[in-house]
Image (cartoon, rainbow, N blue to C red; front, side, top):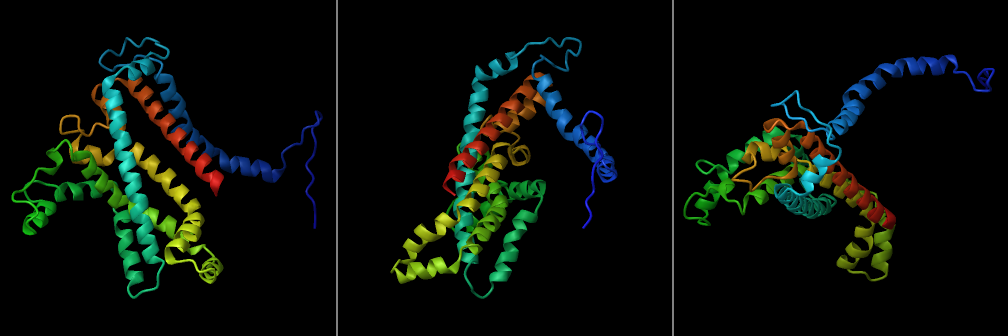
Length: 304
């Protein structure tokens, strides 16, 4: 076995060998692209958030320090959008976790047609978000939607409903479309956790006289904590910053019933053309997402 010794410069620092220089040369284009499309926009948007930038007056861009952030904290519409984002995220993530747990427990059993059911489960996940939103827009349509047709045929309603026109139901209907799309991935993550549980634990629990419920509570759930942590972190991040369904299904309506934080960022930036306040709002959303992810990792990770 041969050892490759690096020559040492006069200052005592090791010089890069041929392989190291070649690796750096090949990685340079990739790093340049990452800097251009990922790192630079992050810092540039942070820079913009300290200016009062409005494209309707491009020659007036005063430096306002943290004024864009303080204006957000005193804006009632901003806090309303935050509360709607919290409602949407909590309802969606809880529903995804519960449904994914039930489906993963089902798929963990041996029964005829399990492979077919597993394949069908992947269909919602494979559909792009835009196509998913258009499909649910047709389902919720007040004139020819499938939801109205099914409920009317089953005598649950006596007339066709304008589902997305009801301010009390809109956020939950959008959450339903989001849950349908996200459940397959969450189910896969939880199913992997289920498959990793040693069968010896269940056999020992049966010997001790544990019932099915006791085995589920004391064996299955504790062993699934890593999967639950991944599901909670990923789905919370997706729910908080989700935009596609709100744009296609309601465009923030009816009224401001579906004005969540991501929609407010879009309106402020691309409709009001206020890039400074839009960037500030984006950083608030990013910090909230980071804070929640860190909290999940600290609390759930400590118990794994």
